[in-house]
Length: 171
Image (cartoon, rainbow, N blue to C red):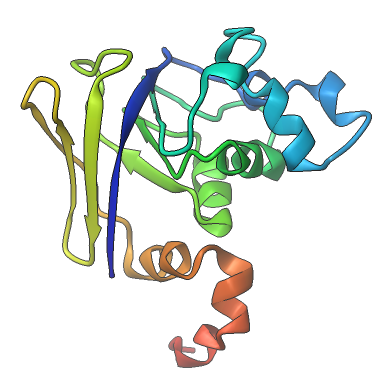
């Protein structure tokens, strides 16, 4: 597996709740992520959704994705063109929802990354390397477990299952 991403850092702080990612009030009318992406993180930054570009990377502090266990939070991030979230730590339910949808959760120290920095991410079987191209800094990241790498590489759990990948797993 090898995934290379480059993009602009979009920086947020600690405890970004799933209801901040996509407000519950927005989900009353639709669950269509193509519509909901217009409201991504509006509670934290009302201008964020219109300013996000394909390839941007979310960067946060501790406990990203805390709150309710809404899978739609991960799918709306992906719908906005964001392929990975770098955070010091993730809520475990959000982390798994991210992997299951093909959004790459990268655990690393994000404190030195600034809004707008250009980042480079390499996801391989043996390591995840995160670099800040703007400053030259490197951020050691936790490697995804093998099964999670396979799911992300497939584009999420649905594609993973469609490919018949579950038949090769140990019982």
